[in-house]
Amino acid sequence: MSASPALPLVILKPREADRIVAGHPWIYAGAIMHVAPGVKDGDLVEVNDHRKHWLGLGLYNAQSKITVRVITHEHVTVDQAFFEARIRAALAIRQRHLPGATSFRVVSAEGDFLSGLIVDKYDDVLVVQTSALGMDMRKPLIVAALKSIFNPRAIVERNEMASRKFEGLPEANGMLEGTLDGPVTVTLNGLKFETDLRAGHKTGLYLDQQANYQRTAELIALTPGANVLDCFSFLGGFALHAARAGAAHVHGLDQSADAIAAATRNAAANGLAEKCTFEAANVFDWLKAQTTVGPHERVIPKFDAIVLDPPSFTRNRASVPDALRGYKEIHLRALKLLKPGGLLATFCCSHHVDSVTFQDVILSAAFDTRRVLRRVATFSQSPDHPFIPCIPETEYLKGFAFEVVR
Image 1 (cartoon, one colour):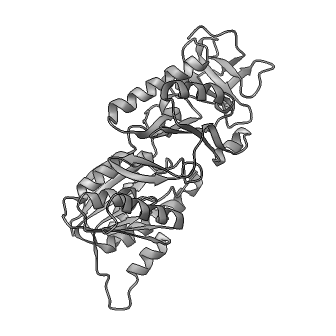
Image 2 (tube, helix red, strand yellow; image 1 turned 90 degrees about the vertical axis):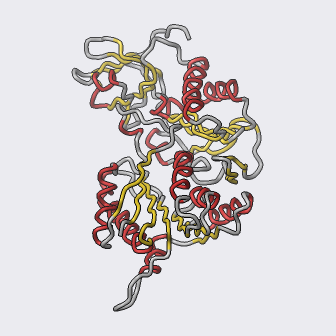
Image 3 (spheres, helix red, strand yellow; image 1 turned 45 degrees about the vertical axis):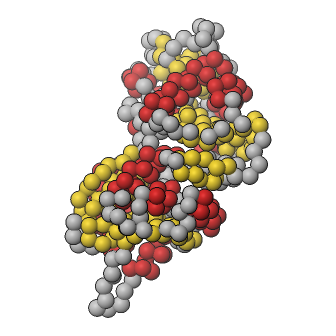
């Protein structure tokens, strides 16, 4: 990578450089003292502090809430070789921490210092998301780098996320390279999952739970012949891992009929159909129906283990109170259905709800149901979704496993 040619200059206000020096890549309009005349949205810019000391190179977009996204602190040319080196460095992290995995997130945006870029690998197919204008404009360089590193069968673009509109970008969904006809089958922890990479939810699967699927199954296996409830089951990730680990029966719930159909096929493909049932239902309504009793009646606990893995209940701080009420509701209902000694594995994927607050909600539900819990595990996102402490936004998935003491 050669030295960068002269670039438009962005100068920060006094006391605004420390966060960038520490490693955070986002620069907001309010932090900027001066922008070179003629700079265009999507341009690569040089970032200096107020004394005109070098800080790095970033991608500029005046339309965005994030005016500059710093992508390197080195004097380099941002070309195909740059992206290839950065993606190879990210790949090495996955190979070190997820040895043997064939499906994982290759590039996790800020977690790999490529703000606005996500690349997921599903065996020999790659899925790309560009949520920032500067990254979107450099898609040809990124695709060329990916082809050089992986030689994939296909590269799919899944750019229908709402965040693109804040960058002035339209939705885009289709093939960037190769061909892909119908769903693909990928392997997670030795289990096969059918997923539609062109039209399914997210980019196909919840890859951030890959390590947690296995760890939760190991905890469930401590109760041989367990009866398990998997709420928000999606394609059956937790359900199939639990069934393979020795559960006698797993019942999966998801609101999407398409996801339930795919989960049923996945159970059959792994020889677990006799152990698994799946039902299309609103989880809140289902739990309420199972825990509603008449006067002088009590709920009879029927499950040895329950998994709660809901979608994010909040996308911004303003909706956090409503989200916490939702989290408490599902935990109240779930705890009523758990047998003494039973296992509750529960997850929250909202960045705006931290782990302390999440646990407090669970303990409040336990108090209201007169249950005492023993915490036996703490979960985070799989290592292909790196958490960089100086970039708090890179931490979003948290979870706990509790045993019901009484």
